[in-house]
Length: 223
Image 1 (tube, rainbow, N blue to C red):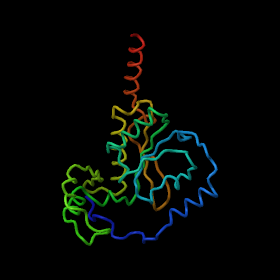
Image 2 (tube, rainbow, N blue to C red):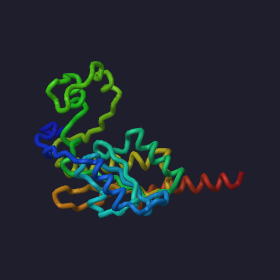
Image 3 (tube, one colour):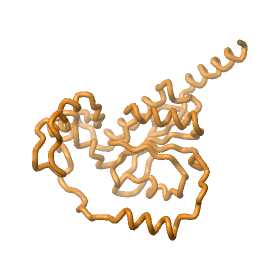
Image 4 (tube, one colour):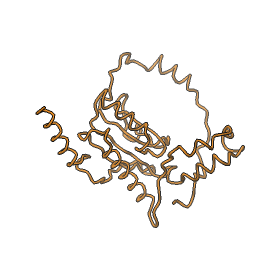
């Protein structure tokens, strides 16, 4: 476990006028009045909700180029991640899924107990005020899925292991088609570089799964 739980410093609060920004966009920028459905690259990215981990920026993406699923830590096990991916598999098509974790992630500095304790204490001086009574009961049913540290590991080792775990979880899930490559990456917020991690697959696929799939297709064709 990380020695320090929770970040000690944060970006200063700067108000932003979202309404005015959108009015300018709608009136002066927006031109595609009938955009086609489906990300043009057919690539999906699962990454953290941390505003510093922005694929739009570090991949210099264009509009409607990828679809992005974000959550705390960029984890793949939350149920809604699977629901979203399965929906896209059915409604569109996917050429690759990229799982991207990033350095200095909040999930490196927290634990299940950290979150549950904070909600149980319900300090009235916490940012944005306290929760309503009864919030603590809901914490037991929430899987926070922070990164777990092993003795002697560096941050990079923890991140790489978490990426492998998340890629392998998706690869083994029955609702993920064997033909879709799943790859793992780490974004280094200090350099801007994204590096691929070896997740023990062949071009993002599991040969055994592909073999089983071909057998399944052949058996179905004979019926």
